Length: 166
Image (cartoon, rainbow, N blue to C red):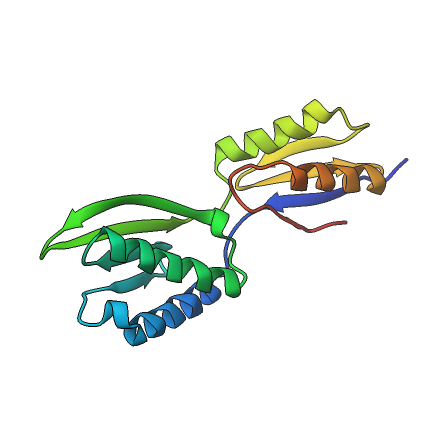
């Protein structure tokens, strides 16, 4: 009887790295001349996984978001996992933007991952959705490597992580 090999497909971000990137972005905003005397701020709520950006106007909001994005990229946080909200007017002549962090695969993305594997018709490769992850299994490790390559080449709107390979 052949053993089945498997791996899990998940997504997520390292909250400590996000916290470090927010601190670095805050320091840069404090020293930049174009933000001098403005109400620009970045707040990170770890419990809910939300970032809140506050700026004086749309122009400064875009600059603030660019600074944050560059710091996240330098710290290795996948920018695909940012769920960017609308820029809305806030009190005191400011604008506000909420950014959510995608910490796990939602059911729709998990279904897309599973469907992509099934449509590829890889020999004896099966995908099953288990909560917030997709488990891909096959008797052949080579077929699992092909499945990983297929998933990496497809864009699902989030950064996929492959773990628990056995």
